[in-house]
Amino acid sequence: MRYQGKVFVISAPSGTGKTTLNRRLVQENPSLEFTVSYTARKRRDGEQDGVDYHFISEEEFRNRVKRNEMLEWAEVFGDLKGTGVDELKRIQNKGRVPILEIDVQGWTNARIYLDNAVSIFILPPTAQSLWNRLEKRGTDTLDKRWRRINTAKKEIESALHYHEFIINNDLETAYKELRGIVIDGDKSQMSSEDAKQHCQKLLQEFDTASWFHQLKANMVQL
Image 1 (cartoon, rainbow, N blue to C red):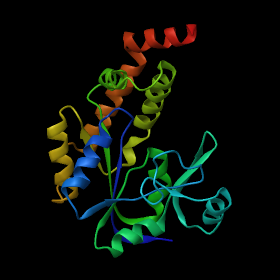
Image 2 (image 1 turned 120 degrees about the horizontal axis):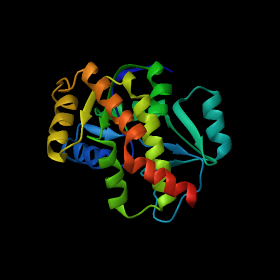
Image 3 (image 1 turned 30 degrees about the vertical axis):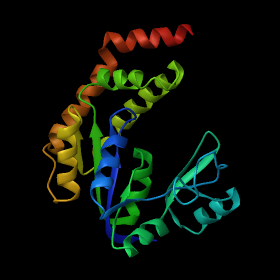
Image 4 (image 1 turned 135 degrees about the vertical axis):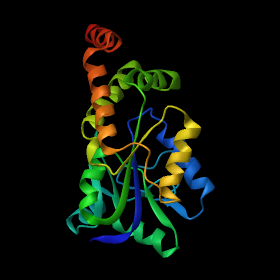
């Protein structure tokens, strides 16, 4: 099941700007293409098979897992979702480079099968800026935003096995750095040691910041 072609893995906590950066990267560089995940959930209105997801039955999904055909997969709230190695080959056969937009858990599971992957983790400048972006969206309930910020904390705790790191303090600057890594083969401006220190700074903010403790207290009262 090993995949030896070039592939880029891009992860980030929710609210870091990953989707905006990745969509622009693929739109402006036709040599790249997103992998399409497999899912066993029902198709929703407006979703297209093979575009939004590959919609398959739960039985077929679990058979793919048994046959070791999934690079990574997870069951979240009863929904099965994952990336098949055939997706990477499909994109490679078109002469393009696959972009895997997966979470930290997905990369942990997939990296043992990917010989030439470059993994990139996008970080927020501060934990509070991440929370502010989640609030600004206006699409999630307070409870969902609370779950997202706690998931972000866990992802930052496990982010240090990525190859490259970008802080999205300014969208245009972050995009230029992301494009430089993927298209030009540049190294990120942040060293592994600097990334480690920044992650520790973010985690310390979660532990000590008054805004986070007040938010936690408010959630307990609900």
